[in-house]
Length: 340
Ligand code: 13P
Image 1 (cartoon, rainbow, N blue to C red):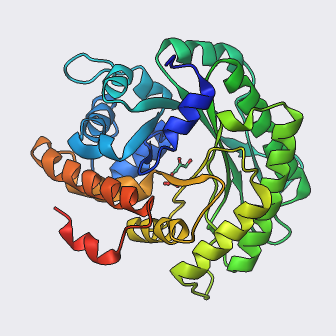
Image 2: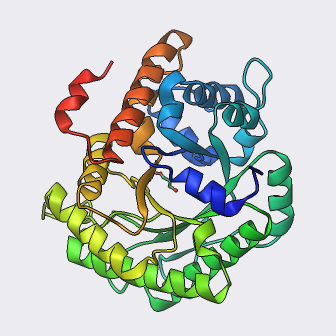
Image 3: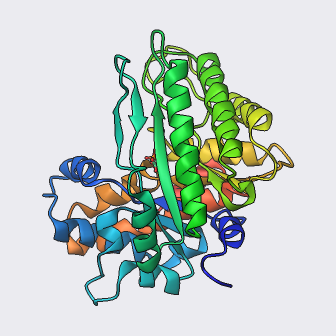
């Protein structure tokens, strides 16, 4: 297999029983995460933390790919082996976040558009040299009074499609991430409505830009109520509404859908994925590409100390296994007690 076969690699990224670890926090975001455990965000500390994630023994049984940030793709472990080689050697595909962040959308109060298209072709060529097999670009859509506007949805969908086409041209599988945020007091129906609009426009633009659907992975939010909504929905309701929305808007040619966790707890994100995979036959693989919902316990266990690396790795291995089971609809919450 050549590493630049996008259809083969897209299928590998969403292989049954496995999912993706999102470890592509920008320097600003990882600094916020390290602040929560009182660890200074130095380049060495960031490297040590990522190294503990990537060297977790059994994780590769459940992890098909890892999304990296620019700094990490250029780093090596303490043994001098570049992280991208370490991952390839474990059978894990390295990927790279290539957007340059969500910036204020002109003419709109509070909405964002993700940037990073200028010079992207040249950056992608370098990322191929550095060993990347796939890319990620995240669009951020906020729900609020009069938001999102059509202008926000269209601008983000267009950028996602331009990015996806450039990635495929370079031989890299694009992860297309239109994230409808959980922030806000909206109910689950409003989340469904906005997610439908975002997906519809995204696939319209992907089609216009000649993106090969078989060689991409979609990374959407689940359909959930806003964080500050008084209404609670059951795991079954979230699973059913999410799958209903996806069935309406995601062509069956897409090999897989890898959800973001978006602020859900580790257990919620796993339970929702499990419930969806218990709903029967789907046109696509339903997988995970979690950041916080895979790393939260590991980060808390580590607290910046080498002595805690085994405990942190045990926490990550446990979450990876739980999500691997959820990929098959074989997870139940009482398995959480087996945590190391
Ligand atoms: P979360 O799972 O923490 O939302 O992160 C996933 C991600 O990659 C966001 O772009």
